[in-house]
Length: 162
Image (cartoon, rainbow, N blue to C red; front, top):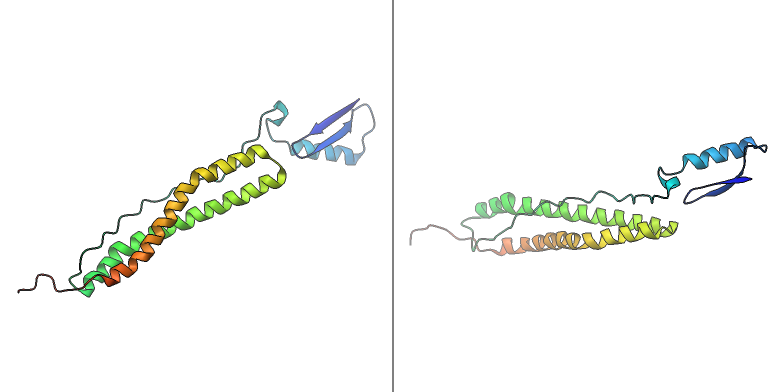
């Protein structure tokens, strides 16, 4: 009688204990058993090793005034309002892009292994996260483009006596 030891990736046929087993056979059998995922011997599916979805930070709105009273006021607006919002948007875009790259790599790995269940889970997560990633990139792009508007906002004397 022969026993069959298998995992998702390896299936090794081993002779039963009544026949003589070589040391290499024993070692191979132990190695195969050590590679089993807990629960697979009971028919449970493995969990998909999904990376943790990033939390994107809310980007404050940058509302341009009609004009600045001075170049110093424009600089203060740029440093105190525009640049912090741009930094958050840039962070969000980078984090979202990194997560999408991780999902792509994971998808490729599952595709190579032929694991269609995990492949579908990763594809669903990528579709679900796409909206957030696209929004993060769009917000970043619009803030980058807003810099020219800040620089073109008129600088005049406010409160001057006429």
